[in-house]
Amino acid sequence: MTDGYLTNHFLVSMPQFMDDNFARTVTLICQHDADGALGIVVNRLSAHTLGEIYQQLNIRVADHHSAAQPVFEGGPVHREFGLVVHSLEPDRHWESTLRISDGLALTSSRDILVDMARGSGPRESLMSLGYAGWGPGQLEQEILQNAWFSTPVERRILFDTRVEDKWNHAASLIGMDLNKLTGQVGHA
Image (cartoon, rainbow, N blue to C red; front, side, top):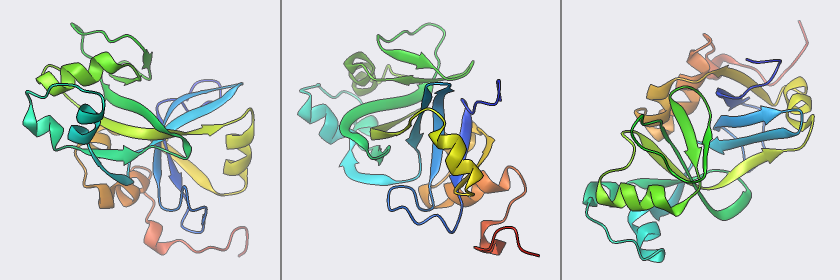
């Protein structure tokens, strides 16, 4: 964590957090600074596949494995806006890319989707529609209210773990068993 900010961390919702947008979610924090935070929920599937997105954008598909990949509900903000969380590739660069860490990035430009449809995209990726956003101090306040806790990012959870297992696996990164937590806070 840099200067108290959570860029390149998972934000894991507490079991008692009942907001319909974030109950039982794992959110990759892509950017967090004094101006607020931006994240992508990585464990909530949408009803769409990448192939449907390619079709809507008139992108020709050569990699049918890519077209079968699920699309995630990245959060409640701009649900029509597509974002790709992906591995950084030393020999590849896409237009609108935000570097999250040395090996992870977020891209919002069409060129990455064209490369993915051709089979020449990043080695690891997941696409979301929408994102989660917090204003200045809002995320910090929600953490103080016990809605969230943070863990380090683990790539295997992002790209290799079954969607239904991500919430528990992310919590286990810091030794937490979410099934044993109570909704009570601050009581002995």
